[in-house]
Length: 213
Image (cartoon, rainbow, N blue to C red; front, side):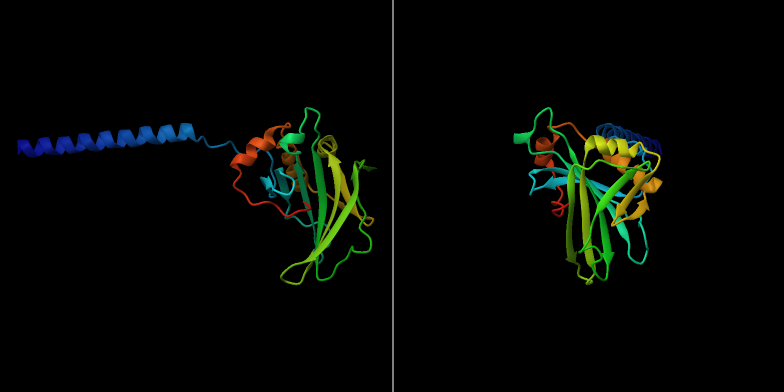
């Protein structure tokens, strides 16, 4: 009976030691891989950073699922930014933000006219580049049209501080919701100073985004 009691005590001791070791390992792993705090930006947009081989730089892309305009002919907000490659970066390098409305419809709607403008608190935002347009057809035979303009990073920062923002495509104005604005604010928060692109490209694990973002 004494031998049996000793064996039981020994087993209990071994179990306790094993549990203690596992707990210590778990604590070490938690310290090594801390859980990031929840994002302060409340939106349901998708934001990802990946290497853009065509531009030889990292690109951060925002895709927003909330529809602007008519639900039967939806418009979607896209935005992205990238810094020049490391060989061309300087302390004065400025990030350029591409802001786009994407139309999804059975037929192309903007192939003859595609003027995109941004209004901040009722006044038109200064644009750095003329609007760009491209169209393609998806597997479901839907017309996908991209209408895009370019803004400076500073212009986007000012835009995200506004109380009221509208995007007009061919004269039709569409109000950006709080959801859209929060997503753009997070995009601004992700901007990095020149120099991050070359280092990030070495460890990038994402596919390149489509050209024209």
